[in-house]
Amino acid sequence: MTGGHVGAHSSLRDAEPKVFWLDRADAPGSSPAVQGTIETDLLIIGGGFTGLWAAVQAKERSPGRDVVLVEADAIAAHATGRNGGFVDASITHGLANGVSHFPQEVDRLIEFGNDNLREIEAALARYNIDADYEHVGGLEVATATWQLDEIEAGVELAGRYGESVALLDAEALRALVDSPTYVGGARRASGVATVDPAKLAWGLADAAASLGVRRFERTPVRSLEALPTAIVARCPAGTVRARKVVLATNALSALVPAIRRRVVPVWDYVLVTEPLSDAQLASIGWTGREGIGDAANQFHYYRLTADRRILWGGYDAVYYRGGDIAPARAQRIETFVTLAQHFFTTFPQLEGLRFTHRWGGVIDTSSRFCVTFGTAHDGRVSYAVGYTGLGVAATRFGARVALDLLDDPASELLHLDFVRSKPFPFPPEPVRNVVIQLTRRAIARSDRNEGRRGPWLRLLDTLGVGFDS
Ligand SMILES: Cc1cc2nc3c(=O)[nH]c(=O)nc-3n(C[C@H](O)[C@H](O)[C@H](O)COP(=O)(O)OP(=O)(O)OC[C@H]3O[C@@H](n4cnc5c(N)ncnc54)[C@H](O)[C@@H]3O)c2cc1C
Image (tube, rainbow, N blue to C red; front, side, top):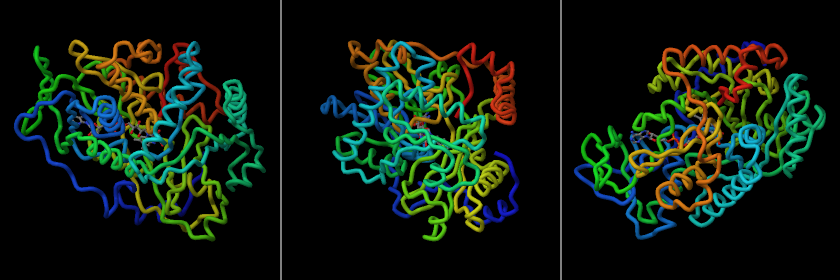
């Protein structure tokens, strides 16, 4: 999508450098930090969706087991509280990616994904979690004619796997959501919902507490040491001695070196507008409140919030040399301006609307775009990382596998290629940075050249690896 827009800068003038979902007067207070020595059966490191789902499922499986969760910052402070809130049944970062990497078992992975989504919905009901969960379905939109081929191929593929996705011409699409940039698209009726991710995470944290999980915040684990009797997690003001450990640290930690080879931290950026008036909303339609993504390689995702704001994110996926995840990287003005320009190109009817929030968050990108698993320290530590931008639902499945790796060697999940095989590793720095920047430029060039993939992207396609968000 191209096109400058004069209003972009002024629309950002009052945008606060804060995460909309976390910027609430009723956000929960924090739990204490670990002090002294704590003993536990299971230590979960990380208070995002993976860690929270691991905590809840661990207690549901074995209510008598003692479970401790430690979080370096606050519950939901990172990707979990910063995302778009798209809940997608796919655990493979979409059907096409699942088919391309796991052709032999994709049917089962679809089933596991659908079951996982049903289990999430059941947990919301069981623990009475109000997270503004809405069955809205999804729209994939083409903003250039070359994208239509890919959308048609996606609809055909979905049909083959029994998913109900309907092709829409520009007129039918614009009757749902009116953007002059749309040239066609597709509507997926099921398997996509939206949620308030922070409310979901806080609800899961309450559920875990109600099951007896002990929670500590402001507690970064600095190192893990394997003793014969325990794994020892050293924190600034104390120590946790655990029989077993789930690492749910996304791309944010180097506690297990293998994670660093398979997963890189990529920054993704988001804007949220002020609430739309009745007239503003009527000017674009969108009565179905679908979650929307465009079909470019550098894509935008957008949705309505419960209070009728538009969350608008994506496009740039930025890797900083050395995998920099310093908090200051969460603000990138040039990306916010680009996003705002694209917003008004998409919805010129909303001229004058202002953004209230702007932020970035770290996506754990793997070269095959979906979660990867592993163990360390004689199988006493397990991890699930690498969801690559589609982890809101998949994290529950990831946590389930991480627990199976520790507890249940007979689990059918542990025989899946999806679980056993590893994504192609990223090269070490400084080559890593060169390769990723080269790939990003090639992806941008492909979007400018009607989707034609140059030699570099074709080579990566042949190797079955890529870079995405
Ligand atoms: C901007 C953005 C938009 C996204 N949009 C979507 C979307 O719309 N839909 C979707 O499905 N997915 C989306 N995602 C991806 C999704 O948010 C993630 O896949 C998911 O939240 C990952 O959860 P997690 O628990 O694995 O990681 P995180 O939420 O990052 O949690 C990891 C936690 O571990 C803690 N931690 C790390 N190291 C340590 C340590 N040493 N000691 C103690 N604690 C530690 C961190 O502080 C952090 O809180 C998006 C991500 C981003 C960044």
